[in-house]
Image (cartoon, rainbow, N blue to C red):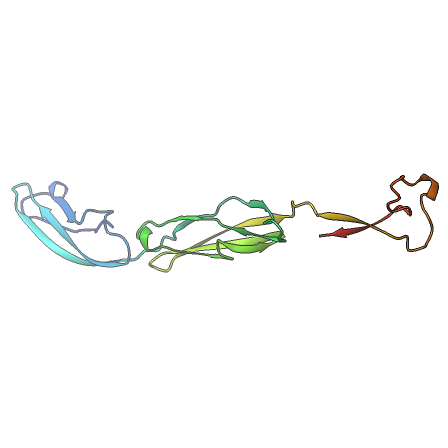
Length: 180
């Protein structure tokens, strides 16, 4: 932040005084205690300094961006899928100290259907941002069928016995379907 300084000099008009601060304006950030030193210089090179204790408070929430909605097929032989993803987050002060938590987390087994994932980024000062996206798991795996010859439960011969194949296999023409 820029410190507002009131300075006067016995020989130099107010508009000709040079005022500077260390650290420079815009370089103090985060939740830190720092001392800002203000220097006032007149046109003859005379200087005066004063110190200002400063506690910078981070009130800016981090940014977070979720991935776009994800659509996947079920894992082979399953009615679900393991899905991984990675949101991106950044912070104006302490990007390395960001915490990003998603619920449900990446790598979870997601059931068939649509699940909303919510991700939250929290910075060192406790500021938060939230984003969400959807994961849709679709059943794209064809069923497996096994046809086995069987007898007609009613006892009727369909097709008529004279029209059955010469092999004589399954003369009643009935098959039982098993889904696997």
